[in-house]
Image 1 (cartoon, rainbow, N blue to C red):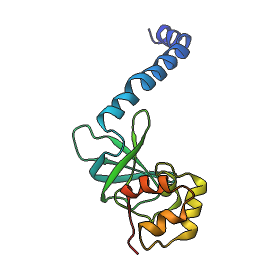
Image 2 (image 1 turned 135 degrees about the vertical axis):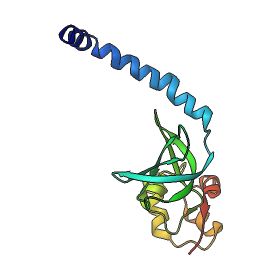
Image 3 (image 1 turned 90 degrees about the vertical axis):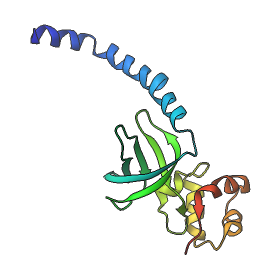
Length: 155
């Protein structure tokens, strides 16, 4: 049975992967988007492990969501996060509120509407005294206004 089963698996491996991709795109990701809409705050996310420059954490619970947090954060601590994006089996959140004067590049780049160029501009203009100083440092004040809900300006 082992040899026969293995032949069947090898023969249909591409079909299985195609089906798996379809389930991720059409079921898992839309379900996460409904479960935790953009801007949802997840409280007490426990930071557990790093993978590159992403810190992964979960809320304590029977089936906790995996939250990828761009940047290197201290492990074994609880933080609040705000959801900004979705993977197929996880969500992307940023620390909430985010101290823009202390955040690292990866975290700043993950803010909605902020990419590498705007993140560089933000890093070059730190520290920010207040929201007006922050908005004036960006090329698009509308994006600055939208991002304000995520930020704090502690020094």
